[in-house]
Length: 184
Image (cartoon, rainbow, N blue to C red; front, side, top):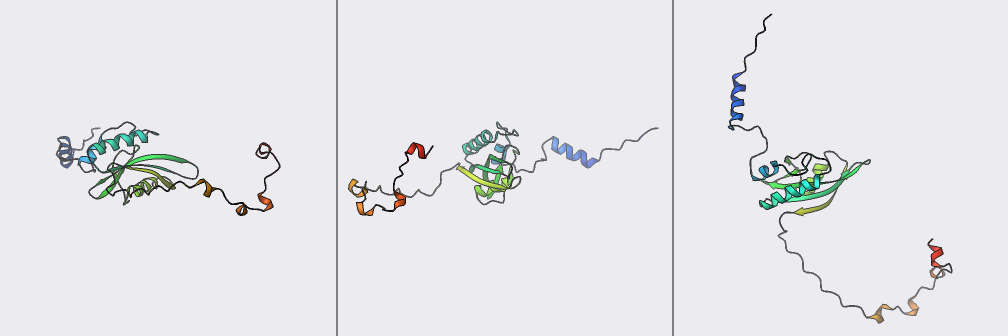
């Protein structure tokens, strides 16, 4: 018995040739400076418990290329298990994108701040999120408020209470039991 082979559709051949010669791209991430930096391999990519080295390397690469980014450390989990995680959030075309080491490709976030982006990332697989630290790649443009003037040191005479101001309640009296026995 002879079987007939199906011919390859011409549309498939044209698409394959375009992808092969670089005329078309199969990626959904836009080709800009930030996404090309994120696409590079960094230590800790796709490895469990390696989010901190990955976030440090990616954050430093984005910072070196003058891209506004934040390194966010947070604690999240469920009632049975709690873990710490670090992600990198960067801003591109007015939107926030986050990248972590398990899924090292940019994911668009609904958040309006880096803290909200961390909560967006953690809500995908945990019950709660507590953001611990946010490190910006650029210094805050708002100036810090001036430090308050130091108060003068109080005089020793003002620190000693008058005898009439001491409590006279029997509950305040010192115990007759030595301190070692009381706290043993």
